[in-house]
Image (tube, rainbow, N blue to C red):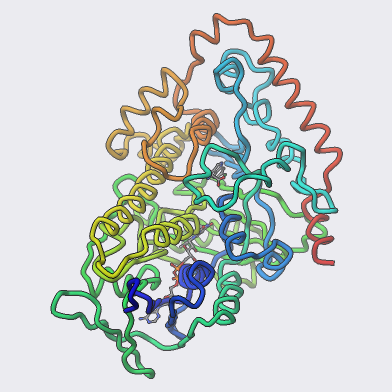
Length: 521
Ligand SMILES: Cc1cc2nc3c(=O)[nH]c(=O)nc-3n(C[C@H](O)[C@H](O)[C@H](O)COP(=O)(O)OP(=O)(O)OC[C@H]3O[C@@H](n4cnc5c(N)ncnc54)[C@H](O)[C@@H]3O)c2cc1C
Ligand SMILES: N[C@H](Cc1c[nH]c2cc(Cl)ccc12)C(=O)O
């Protein structure tokens, strides 16, 4: 241990979590800490074709990586929104976009929309992005400039802030789709280049000292490896935190029953078919199917609850959904551990990634959890005295993010109007996390705002809740009485401005495919 505190870091696990952690810590502390990353050559990583939050750009900025560097290496594309298909009824869709919701006279535009919007679709009337998604547009022009002046101003946002410090200040217009396994490979090269020691071997034992702290790990071929701080990135196995240190795992399954997935990677002729600029979540009889457009193929999979659907049935449904292109592609069946570790940091061990916690990928939060955990780890990095208050603050921040996202996901199922199978009928009566029942009652009287959503930072702004409630259609909502009593001229002007801007951008922007074809040429 150095005079400042722990400076020998051992990371176990070489998936996205392991390499994101190694590269970020190297960028933060350079050679003032030493990092060893041990990963098994036999135990595979999870990588299905992932979607992200827009905040991940801060991760790449921190590492000084530009889109032109990392995106082609990871088959990455842009994500302007999540498209929810068939959650209200077959044929219906709406978007949850990356776009700040406008306000008029102190009320969100959605409130004015409920009182008498110009059209049937709140997403198209209140957000420009919905039209860009429907039209398959890129958020950047071929020369790389961002879609409009307003968004360009976002790139001048203050640097050096953590994600939670950025929240509410600006809304960047897009996130990414990429292959997490390729990102891990890309970051491995970045980290090793900067001095991270990489060992391919299996951890067979974790030895504790008399206080119950990790003393060393035992590998199959490289013997004992020692460090001050151990980071558990071993995925659902939780080899260090859950197994060796016996930290219990708190399941979220009473509220979020989906515990299984079957995934396919399907090569497609993108030139012919185009590349959609959004993630699609299509409701199914016992869950939903994700479609994530990558460059050259799609990642797709059925997330389901095994209490309602067998793996064979799920694979059959997925293959029928995708069509003949998937015929020769092998399916990957995955059991998901849904919930979080009771503490993600115990003694000298911090879990990051699936070992810390995971919720089903409906709102693409897995990599956001990792990014948030790493930022918090740097913020609360231990000193020589291992002050337990630092650990407690870290644990609280990580738990809040996961518990908050759990609530947000529960809102999706409770508010979905669809009720054609037992799975969807049960979604209306399934218990929701504490306090959400009361919040739902309040949102029936007044649309969600920052005062009445989950009270701690969890990545989601109030407008995200509005989108889900307005789009899912199963919970009665009303506009504020004050909106009904007010002159709506300014709101109608705003609706018109959105329509005009959307039309202009649809005409001016290239297709999503054309943008990436140009970037790669
Ligand atoms: C179905 C599904 C869909 C998902 N979709 C998304 C999405 O759209 N967006 C998103 O943000 N996230 C998504 N995720 C989550 C995302 O894929 C993971 O958060 C991310 O890949 C990080 O995984 P990880 O590194 O924690 O674990 P893993 O990828 O499982 O890596 C674990 C590592 O630990 C190593 N290991 C394990 N045991 C040992 C041992 N004894 N000795 C040495 N090494 C060991 C393995 O070899 C491996 O390198 C999804 C996850 C699933 C399951
Ligand atoms: N931290 C925010 C979270 C956020 C804001 N709008 C959206 C839309 C979708 Cl589809 C996911 C997350 C968010 C961010 O990532 O910008």
